[in-house]
Image (cartoon, rainbow, N blue to C red; front, side):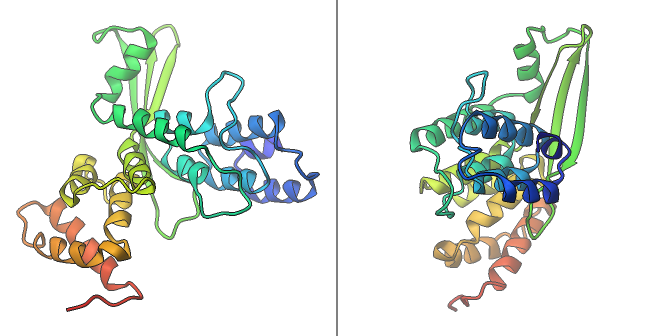
Length: 253
């Protein structure tokens, strides 16, 4: 099963999980598989493991719990699965763990990712290093594609550190889980920070703004932005208006 998890072979993982004894993955064995799936960035396999009884809050061998790791690394889709509360058969993450993850992700919003990775490696700002920015497709069952940019810093001695820059999406999602009020302008600013319409940051802001209980206000707010001088702002607003117009519950006049 570990080989299938590392390969991102969701079908094989599902077949093997169906043959696993009840509670077989509740302990260290399941934790090791979850770590492998999280590091591979495969949120669908993470979901399958959680549905099979793997504990989403059980610390790994290095003492780091999965939720805190995902918040720090910027693995938005993995964190979403770990903290998803709509499944009655999954083990739930304690609230204090999720609150801690929110603070971890918030800290990244004020950092330069490359400089932070250099700091973690103990390298000074001007030390020679290979810096890679790679746009990756998130492996997750969503109705639209999502992307994130992975930044990796490699020093001359081979030491490396990396992160995905989807921390704004994580903060937006966790604030929504805790019913923390955030202004529409702040959500727009998060979406436009990298201005990538297929990024997790952009999409998560759209999801929160399109929720039924705030749809009326979001519609009026977005309508005021369709003539904004910024192309990115106009695109965000028109996408949101389209999303609101497709909702099953029609908006009032």
